[in-house]
Length: 165
Image (cartoon, rainbow, N blue to C red; front, side, top):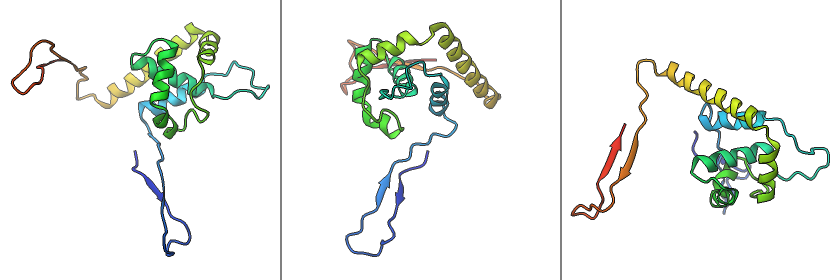
């Protein structure tokens, strides 16, 4: 990922010149980019010919996937997650009209064919895992989890950590 790019104006030699800083989020080859491409491949089942659609279906799907990945299960929790991370999501080019309402999330959840979506997500995850496995043939993939012990405190005031792999 590139750092912030600067777009300079033509009159850069003038006094009081300021450079416009643009954050271009282009995660090439990352899991997020592939997930966004996957969400964009889901056909839109809504009434697209009426002209009253405020949010792209792919944006709503990504919001729901990211929210649930972060432990937010209910629609109101996903909306709160979206409001909290709205600036980050907008930098990724998503949710230009803000966070969808709970009714919109409900319509999208009810309109998507669950078994077909689950099969597509499973195929997506298997494909990505196989690519990782091919790229790391000489290395082993290890899942690491860490927890802090409660009730036990060191002299420095911190709780001891337990790490399992």
